[in-house]
Picture 1 (cartoon, rainbow, N blue to C red):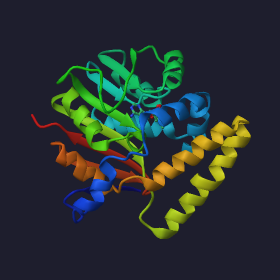
Picture 2 (picture 1 turned 180 degrees about the vertical axis):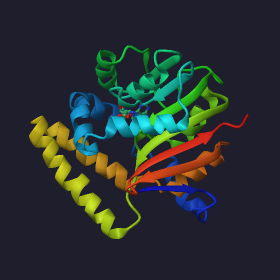
Picture 3 (picture 1 turned 120 degrees about the vertical axis):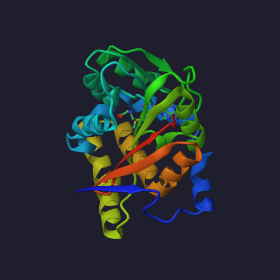
Picture 4 (picture 1 turned 60 degrees about the horizontal axis):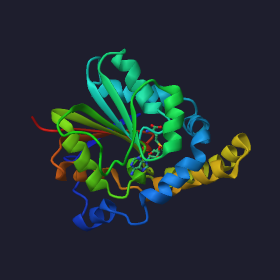
Length: 254
Ligand SMILES: C[S@@+](CC[C@H](N)C(=O)[O-])C[C@H]1O[C@@H](n2cnc3c(N)ncnc32)[C@H](O)[C@@H]1O
């Protein structure tokens, strides 16, 4: 069941609550980079387990709905092992420019093997690209890892051309308390153990446990929409699946 929400649907989250999500000193690029470097070889397996095999389909369907098409210039921020970029490349059918950026060299090394696209090591908070150049900036499942969400959104804004679009895929806990507890047990309790057994490596369990901690602590949908608007984006909206998977999109005004 797909639920659409936008900033008009709900009362605006309080400025104080939102401020808490803008910058988080606990999410510094150094430790995040170390974690993803250690677990890069397990990332695709863990993603398969978590998405129960639907990851590629869901990523592609969001990018298609957002309007990614042949001939465009797309910057995939936090490209990781290339799971979102791979779906963008499919939709672009070999025409246009697709570039990935990530802070983890080990994630980039896996992406290098899987994708034939230019990849750059860098951070979402200071993108190594010229202003006004991209039709799309995509950020898949990484906003909850960055040290500063506002800076990240401002960088996406800077790199987009007027009329360009931002696509954010994220996961945040369901509003319903029972669904939240079920998600905590499944994603935070069962999946780390499944990851350990299948990958036969404690690092895989650590990555999965870390995923749940960041999901549980992530900003509410309204706060993310508010941040997008605060950075100047228009038509900010979010479509949710299972009240867990969030597909945010917004446009830089013409
Ligand atoms: C969960 S993975 C997502 C990968 C990919 N986008 C996908 O859809 O599967 C998160 C990625 O974000 C990267 N990352 C985390 N913080 C970052 C930052 N501040 N700047 C750039 N990349 C970052 C990590 O290195 C990791 O590769």
